[in-house]
Length: 414
Image (tube, helix red, strand yellow):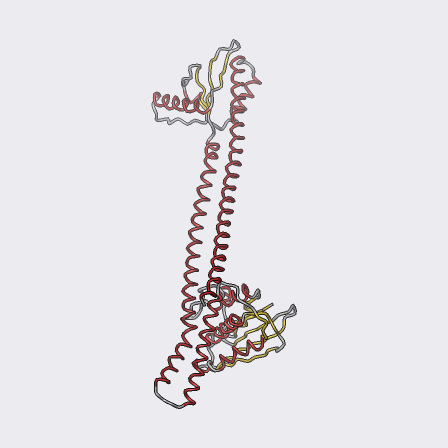
């Protein structure tokens, strides 16, 4: 037993390792992709800002040149016209000072796009303008307006417009917002993922307890019969046969759970015989639930497929249980049809006349943890879908359902 389990354990570790590497690679790719997007945003925004800055500098250059020309020839009307046009095209702060770089009074007449508080005193206004000039000088060197002899008579200080200043910070704000969004999304999805895993583990534990409950209860009952001291050989023999069946049932359950998470061994099986075996098991137990539920079979005896017998039986049992537990009438009917697929393999329909499903239930019925039953745990159909689609590369879906009419499940095994 020990030698048989060690290879399986190693295989599980390899599978888990591959899964971990895959997740790690996905995270790296997403991180690189996110950083790439951020870099592109920064580069694109920087390009726009640089173009705007160059445009503003060229505008100031033009304005300074026109001012210098006007200082040399104040009577040129055409020059004054172009100076006025250049003046109206400036949308960034500009301050004109004397050659000594000091503000010129009245300050408002020698500034563009700079607002002064009218309630300030003259000294307060001068101090504000002087501080603004100092800040502008740190960003860009001033343009000089000279006389024809080359004497500097005025200087033009400027800085970037409010739009440019905002654009410079915009990429960082965008990155912060995107990063916050990614972090919130990651935390949310991680929480959802942890809850799903928790629900699956709880469901698996309950499913195991449910699966083990029936044979264990039967074994306890058989033991009580043997302890009663009744030496009727026929009764003892029948009790031993029943105990053997329950022990075999426990073995089947153990095999089922041991195959979850690993690739099960498949064998060529006659599907009609496998379905009939499961149906006979339910035929003797359905009367005990207090409702008259009949399982009708229409099985093609020639259909064969490569399946894992234990897992396939588990799927069929879950479908029958789901139909039985959804019965709200005493004349319940479950119809199982087996036909050969046109492309090869088996087509199995499990139809019932139970309460059916709403459109909302139909969309979520295969999700782990979702159930409409008061005492259910929502794992049977989810597990069945995984067994059919992942282990047998088939399909399991709801073909048709109507509230108050019934539900038809369709299973395809290649």
